[in-house]
Image (cartoon, rainbow, N blue to C red; front, side, top):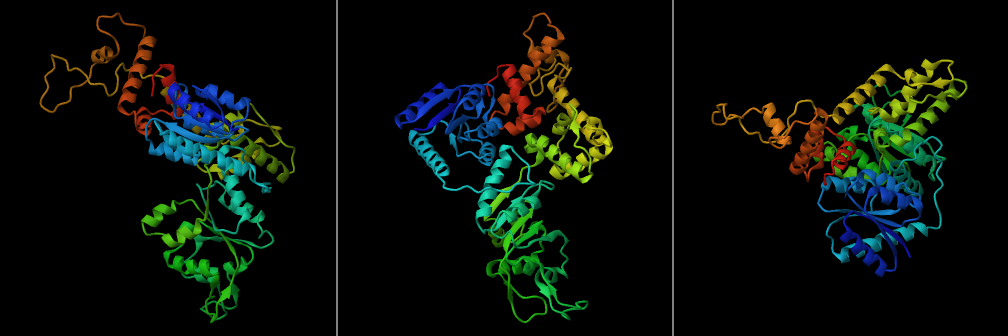
Amino acid sequence: MSQILIIDDDHDVCETIESLGTRLGHQCESAHTLRNGLERLRRSHVDVVFLDIRLPDGNGLDHLHEVKAMPSDPEVIILTGKGDADGAELAIQGGVWDYLLKPSPVKEITLTLGRALKYRDEKRNRNHHVALNLQNVVGRSQAMRSCFDLMAQACKSDSNVLITGETGTGKELFARTIHENSSRASGEFVVVDCASLTENLVESTLFGHKKGAFTGADRDRIGLIKLADQGTLLLDEVGEMPLSLQKAFLRVLQERRFRPVGEAREIQSNFRLISATNRELEDHVRQNRFRSDLFFRLKTVQIRLPSLRERREDIRPLAMHFVERLSRRYDSAIKGFGSEFFSTLEAYDWPGNVRELANVLERAFVAAGAERTLYAMHLPQELRIEVAKAQIVERRHAAMPSVPTVPGEPETPDANVETTAGAVPQPTAATGVNAVLPENQPLPSLKEFKIRAEKKYLETLVARHDSELKDALKVAGLSRSHFYALLKKHDIRH
């Protein structure tokens, strides 16, 4: 018997799924708010969660990582009343089992639930687990746990791996970790920087050359592909590989045979290929800048590393890891952390990701000198300035503007103002007030008026962009979490 939890504020949906699950022999329970659902997940084991997107106290997708991070790591089936392509993409990236539109046929719900439970049973009954050596890889967020699952798959096989992610997310470290946990760990780990390959030396660098093959070839040279024999070859920044080389490398990948420059016969190299890029290779393929046949061969196993701003819960353990390493490197006592140190780090956006974090921490470590504690004051000024600016902007968004108008509301033109055909009447303070306050009512306090104006603005925003959340957030200049907090504050259903 499996434990099923339905988190949905629609009582009819909950009753339908509960009835269905009970008939199938499962234990079912419902929660009508995110808060109650998360509390239920923390209390005891759950196998499958049906999670609604639009709930009274928040968006289900925003809390998907919390659901997946629960000790029971339940399979999640997303429910939504409206088709949302972006929402489906976010849900699948977040590791959900399926994405169902309400109302869904009972047969479809039954099939989806059955497949999710079968998959979960197979995971539970696996006879062995891969114990990965993650000595230098730090991460406990759900996003990184998903990457570790894919890493485990890659370590057990000899398949080609494509690692994608922004600059500084640790793609080479991930590739090296896969190599060190694979059956090829005793072989060489050879890195090819495709961005630095020059047209005239690319074949010599990869394939090697014979003495006298060209001007300056004064001795035989073994190419990087041969050096990776019985080991792993990493094509770093593979998106920068010249088109002229892609066809030749495709054959090497298929046959594991190649001919060094100036050599009459082919030689072999039994290497395992891992590729890494910060580019969107799908876009390169569509623009004919990357061969589609090579792209599909590279991505047998694909791992997307999240940016640091997507896994802020990893900033603290990463910082502690780097500071401990710096202490060993500089042969000094391990430093402690001031109360605002981590909150400042977590408020920054980290465009350079983990690589930037490591650099910032080293600068702070050096700035602290012999002091035993790292404070926010030790962090680079430019970082602290960015954090301060972001906090000021966030506070401005939290407060309504002082101009008492409702953006987007049609204004009634003043009877005394002449307008010409096609002219747009200009709003006045009076029309703005009348849009929020009933006529002939005494004026409230400015604070009360701002609250009413805020609610009117949000109602208009929801009405105009109900099916396009991204557009609504862009127009309002709000973060997703702040947007839903305001809706909850004013009891506005979205």
